[in-house]
Length: 327
Image 1 (cartoon, rainbow, N blue to C red):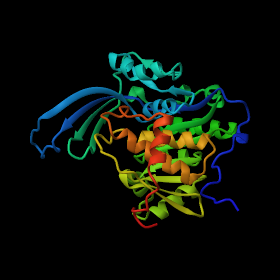
Image 2 (cartoon, rainbow, N blue to C red; image 1 turned 180 degrees about the vertical axis):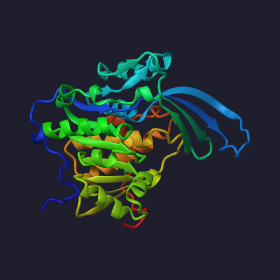
Image 3 (cartoon, rainbow, N blue to C red; image 1 turned 60 degrees about the horizontal axis):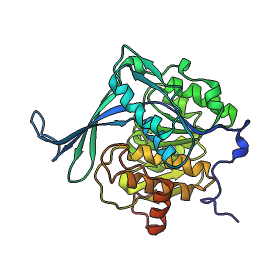
């Protein structure tokens, strides 16, 4: 009998038409102001910035770029401002061969930004972000033909109404739907009802379901319609549920420089494994590894691994025993 942990999560037969791209990302991009600091400043205090760089980022833009780095054909749909920052966030996508024809420029709006404070000693980051309301995605930004030509659709939770609309189209077309959610908001339940693979943060899971019990939160996500629900736990790893079984996958120890973008890269490697026909245990292990690899460089997109780098890292590291919270 095949171990359920290794049975493929997704079958290409679900698609109703041949795919032209592997993954379509619909969501946010950002120009990150990355500040390296020696600890966070005290309330009402001051602290020196050790180094400062402006670097492209954003949940979905980073995930799509990471997918491309892993060899997937990728496209990105979102909104940017009509400023230099908008050109900067799209530059690495274009250079990597990501299709950005679906990106809409809003001339009168500034591009989304984030001020990211990275602690020099631990590499942990604190994020302050701002998005002009005019950059919010609408249903009109979502094109059925764009979704139908993909094998997987990757969304964030920034604009739940547009996301739910896109997810419904994907479901009808047999396109796998993956969601990155870290903050509950109005309309999130409707979006989750059309998501195959919600991969959410611990904070989201606990806040959305009002519980500290991750097993209850995972089952709640499955009850909303998920084929496999995942909660990410940072360097500890991730936990998942397919509706009846719980699965824990430990993280990897690396020398951390910056945790920015770790979750975005986790999602990218999840999509990569999903489309490769891997089972949940193998997918989660690769996602944890890719996330760890990205933490070794500064910036959300600083350490995106290639397939060769990812597979080499996995081959060199034996699976570790689970050291996370009990499920």
